[in-house]
Image 1: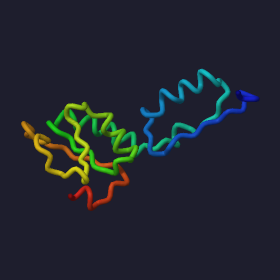
Image 2: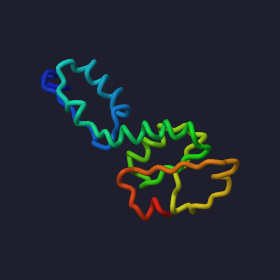
Image 3: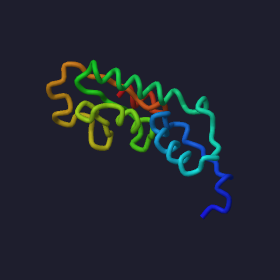
Image 4: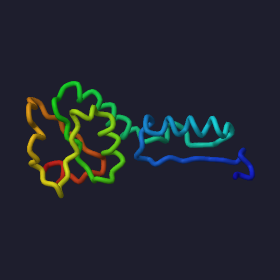
Length: 123
């Protein structure tokens, strides 16, 4: 139990978007009205912009590949922004040419997490 609920603060991971953090921050503010946190300007807008672009891109493609490390929060956030029926998260360890990934796809989109190595994106 907190000794002084008026002395509570929070920070967020910089690779989480405004959308990713909104519900958690709102819950914290309800529980701790005096909570202190970073200004919205401090949230990573590169992540937010990527996720917004993914939402737009999904309306134009049949399949969207989201490239990046398996544990990348940016990759995961982009994938959550896309309809699951269209989104694919390629995994080097499983092989790139899984049967059916592109079945029926006339248009394929590609995006990557900000920290995805250029080599991985080119591949």
